[in-house]
Amino acid sequence: MATTAVKKTTTKSWRVVDIVVAALIAIAGGVIFWAWSQGAAAVSAPMNAVYPPLTGLIAGGWMIPAVLGMLIIRKPGAALFCETVAATGELLMGSQYGASVLFSGFVQGLGAEIIFAIFVYRKFNLPVALLAGAGAGLFCGLNDSFAPWGWNIAYSGGDKLAYIIFTAISGAIIAGALSWIATRGLAKTGVLSSFASRKAATEPVFS
Image 1 (cartoon, rainbow, N blue to C red):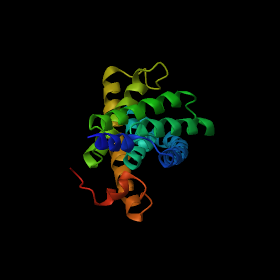
Image 2: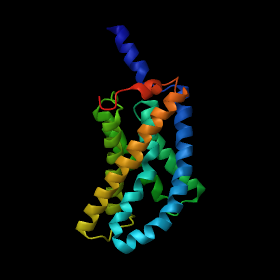
Image 3: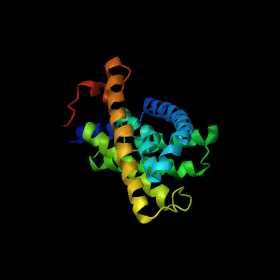
């Protein structure tokens, strides 16, 4: 039993390679955040003209580091770390949203982290990835709708609810599904050989 306990502790402990790769994912995520913000500014204009809450459908791009980081590293705190550091990178590159991106990154990472924690960091299949993305999207929608700096805080109650639903859907599809697909693709190349996700390409999709 002592051996088993040591093995579990070691498995959940962060190694240097975990920190380095998490940082790389976060840095890449910061670049994605910045680029996504630039593109979102253009795409959101026609959406606003049709129905403003629809802009929630493009929010998932800001949540990719949280889900991708956890699917690769598979250690407690990975989603929160990658998302928060990515948000910091976006801020340093000059975010149009200012310092509020730091809190946004934190809560989005927390939304994904909670889902993986519910499954005790043992399940990383497609359904869990989708739920993690949706969790990040849910927290994103709540932050945007109710935080003092939320950009859509003036929405009516119905519009806020619609926006939150759209961000959850976007998070599930863009951050959840795409990150899961990307992890399986990376595993096939062998670059994840140092991680528990090295067999991601052959893991069951639903179990």
